[in-house]
Length: 332
Image 1 (cartoon, rainbow, N blue to C red):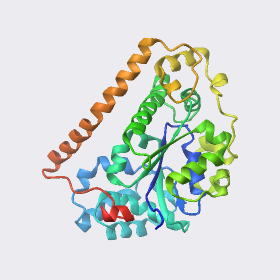
Image 2 (cartoon, rainbow, N blue to C red):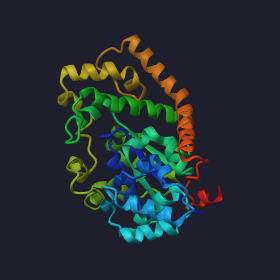
Image 3 (tube, rainbow, N blue to C red):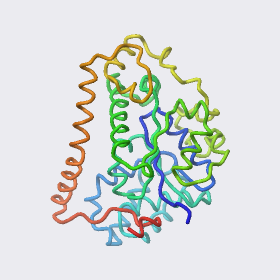
């Protein structure tokens, strides 16, 4: 039986998630859409949508989805999506998965997924919505991520916020590698993928239980199809995979910015195989380890608290949210 588990691409912003999205989208069985923004927002508002066994509630949810800002990038007919969600199993995950299924249908592909860097810090939510999901995390040198983030039109004004993007993503990556089994979470380094795409794509395909296809090494051929033109910061996706941006932080960051990055990152860089240019103080290593341990222990408790708060707001137990679309989802 062919694998139909959903595929989610995650990572720090500017780590190569769009390139990886295109590599996967080049596969004849997999469709990964341009970045959407309704999944986490909709999950956060699930109490407002209420019991989706009510058709009117499903229609309300569907109307909200097709009105979200980036829905138009999917190239789907809004009325058809609304009707499909109303006809789908009555869960939040099924509603979201129906949109991705319809996007895959546009390309005649049986397997669907989604890409958004922020998902890396919300993997328990992704796996609650899609319990059979497979997660691919792309890791990149934090200094290169920061230098690239610094040049985007949507960057925050505070440089420390850019540093924190990578720090939090690195911590989430370390936690996920500990927490999830090998058939759920797979990690690849950006530097390795652009230097020699085929062997690393073969490993990704083995993880996904798919056959490797050479077209995956030419993601730039799909950039005009799967990357909206208005995302001008993704111009590199129109080029073949290249190492020209590897370690470009050496010329794109000032000496002071490098110092601030490496001081904040502590020994995280080394944990992913990147050599710091400055010695890492023992105090920084201890702080980083303490944060990681705290997040690992406190995150499950926070998730339980959020779910209890949802029940308090609605006045009753929360309806099921897991999707019921794929083989494993339906048999659970």
